[in-house]
Image 1 (cartoon, chains in turn yellow, green):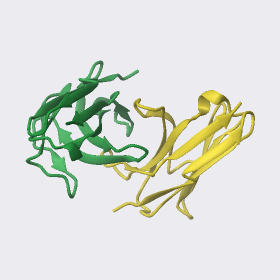
Image 2 (tube, one colour):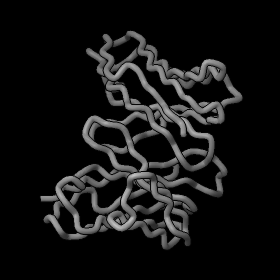
Image 3 (spheres, helix red, strand yellow):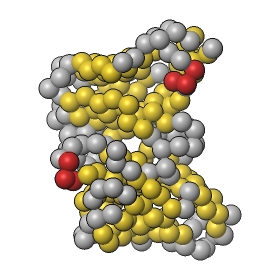
Image 4 (cartoon, rainbow over the protein chains, first blue to last red):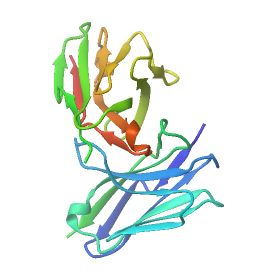
Length: 111
Length: 117
């Protein structure tokens, strides 16, 4: 099955700096890669996603890049703000059902 | 947007009793719902996939007789933790996929915090 690895496990940045979280996957059949933000005790919220036919996608301060050859994808957050502090999860899937989640990255944005 | 609710949001029960958690899609029909378990500071672990009108598909290592899943309608799936023990204490989150939309996206419920004493 698919194996998704996520790094780093914790990330601390100064407000205004950029943050990058990286994930690798093992199954070349995976074709959908969502990113979720989860605040403490709350539900994961989809913040951006990318399909395998696209190399990059951007939504305001958030962008995701995908390298299918190397089987890795990354989340980029620019101009970070304290409200960006949360745990971020990447995931991968090759069908509509089974999402394989990364282990999570706790992002701390210091004011 | 698509909304998924869960009930209860938290529950405390005694060891040996059973607890039922409901997951509802409020504004769409969910042909498929998913149940996850999340331990503190850990990732989401898929427990099972439930399809409306058929038996749930459990992930390896998840006890079918302990975690009973019923997807009785296109808007409701339930997870029953039978004969609960303290080690079952966890955060249980459901998600649902809008089959009509034809997308991969899963919409998550707010989660249920289960504490078994």
